[in-house]
Image (tube, rainbow, N blue to C red):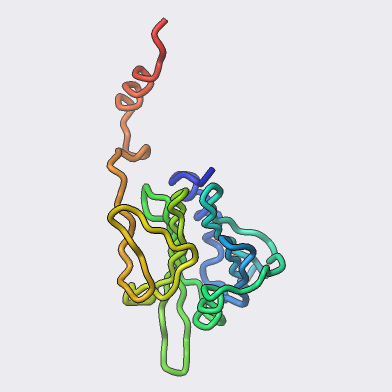
Length: 185
C-alpha cells in the first residue's frame, strides 16, 4: 500500500535533516527504486524513493544497498546531481507528492533541479526536472486520461483530487462521515 498524504508529510519531516547534505552516490535498486546516497554533518545517509505501483514510498536509511545496475534515468541523475547539494525536501500539501530540490555548481555556473516523486499507486512516477520545470528524464513513464508526461516537455503536476483534505475537515464533517458509515442495527 502506498503512503497517504499525512504519512508522507511525517516521513518528509523525518528526512528534513538531509537538507544541506551533498549527493555522493546514485543507485538503482530495482526497476522502480532509486537510492540517493548523501554525506552530511551526521555522516552518510541514504534517501530511497520507490515508485512501485503497489508499494510506492520514500524513506531515509543509514546506508546504501548494492546497485542492481544503472538505467538511463540513473545515468542522467549521476551526470547532473553528483556533487550537488540537497537544498529542499518538501511534500506538496494534501497530496502524495514529494519534491527533492538540488543545486549543483558546474563550470558553466549554478543549476537547480527537482526530483519529483509522485507516489500515486498505479500511476506512481519519479520525474526529474530542470530549473525551468522541463522534464529531463523519468523513471516509470505512466500515461493517464488527460495527462502524459514525457522528457523534453514542461512538467505539469497531476490533477488534484476533488475531495476535502482530512487536515481541513471540521469536527462536524467527521461526525457526518462516521454517521454515514455506521451500519443500521
